[in-house]
Length: 393
Image (cartoon, rainbow, N blue to C red; front, top):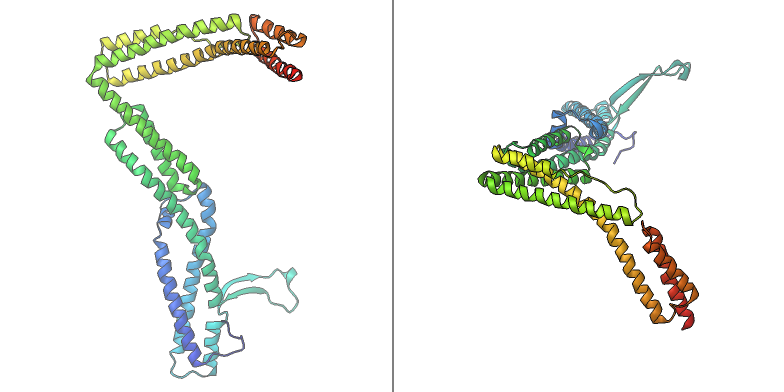
């Protein structure tokens, strides 16, 4: 509670006030020392922040600096009050001085010259900002959570990344960086470590989940590759034969894709389908060269990776062409089913139904066949059957 400014504290009140303020300042001192060791603050001091972290830290840092300044002012005022109280006898002037120190605004914070255009003839030349113990304590209490929130957020991101990256780094140290996958992984781990040191607050939870999950996935993939490489080295001939089987699968897939694409070009109206030359013979020649002069297993692994990529592309091309052919057959089946349904419902000879049937049949038999037009015609035919059969019921 703040006393009336005109009230002069008694000796007993002065002693209670000094003791209370001493306890508060002692507690604040312990808290500030603890805050000074906060892991988030240690990180921000070690690595100057950038980006989002710099933007959030700037006002918090200013608040922290002001807290320390106010703490120094509080200590100075309390020391002055203790010195004044140390006198054996306190007269009215002494109590008035102590009241001003403990309850007034004895500390000058700033002094600003007032522009002449804003002064009166007999007014002051300077504007002096004064503050007292109560105001300093209030603004320190207000600033404290602002500072701690930023420091806690920095520490949380750093702890999360370090706890997740530590096992990855340990595994990387164990495996080494003998293949490109591991070399790139090591680079990306270093990049993340730099970012979490300089701009941790730019890494939101979703971003962290994605990046850490990606690093873990790639580590598993790299470990699996190394396992494969060791297996290749142990049984080289078997590894070569398995790669040769993939080359043969690639050749056959190219053949099927070519047949399906040719069939589509003759029977279905469609945009040009992707073409890919049959390079299975090229891969086969590379494999023969590797078999004759066995190098490091990584060369065979890289060749097998390229073969697998080519096989995936050829498979997609085959599926695209075959899907169009399958769609035409599916439409033919649906049309036959609807014709049978029309006969069963006794509307197959209806003039409108016959006309619709002829349109769908004609579009189906046309080469190249417009699948979109056929789909619309069969839909119209189905709806007309439903309409006509409904009228007869």
